[in-house]
Length: 64
Image (cartoon, rainbow, N blue to C red; front, side):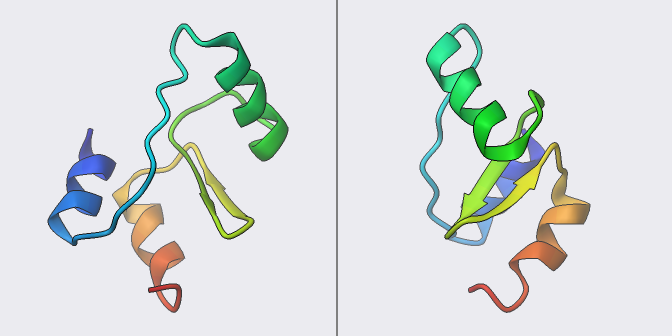
């Protein structure tokens, strides 16, 4: 979980929802992002889906 390690190492608090095996959580993620791949991040209504650290870093710029 490279993304989780990055967030933890940079003291960025997030709420983690494990969608594996949770049909309601999967449906909420698909409704939010339009796809079924994790991780999916909702940052005040801006969604980043199916990403790694390389996509996360530029997404977070200006948001912290």
